[in-house]
Structures are given as structure tokens and as C-alpha cells.
Image (cartoon, helix red, strand yellow):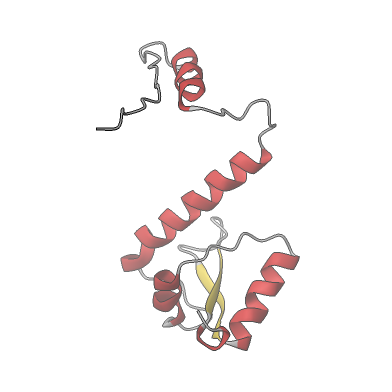
Length: 125
């Protein structure tokens, strides 16, 4: 994507004050670059999705997102939270394989059985 076509939107959400996330900055090109630079400098997660940015850039700064976009924003927030959780987890606690994840899950939920996942090599035909 060329820099001039880059889009960015900054959202904030305070559950005690806001009924939904609020657009606090929005722009294209150099303005979008500045929004992203500021977020990265302040350690604010940046989620890159051109389609979502296109939709959100249509909103006016200061407005809450409309209910039609709740699902989009919720999916973005969930992905950011998941990545943040994985980054903050100590390396030793982060499961490395599907088997390790299944074992950990079965310990916390006894009704779930651990499933072995093996890599199968197919013989050439």
C-alpha cells in the first residue's frame, strides 16, 4: 500500500464514561502516519486492517462508533487483548505445541481430554 493511501483511526474507550468506543483521531496519508507513529511511541497497540480503517475513517472525530460496527471493533479488541496476553506471558508458561495446549486445557477443565496431534508424512506416490 502506498503511503498516500494509508488510513488510520484512533479509538478510546472508557467503560465508565463511554457507551461505545470513541473516534479520537482519523486521517489519510501523512496524518495516518502520524497517528500510527504516536500510537507506537506510546506503546498503544496498532491493529492493521485496511477494511476496518476504511469504515472507521468515515466517522467524525468525537463520535462513538455506531452499533453496526460493534462486532468489528469487538473482534479487533479481542485480537489485541489476546496478543497482549501472549506477549506478557512468561516464555515458560506459553504453550509451544498443540499437544501442550491440550494438556494444559485438560488440567484446568477435567472434562476435556488431551488429544495427541502427530505430524504425518505422506509417502510420495
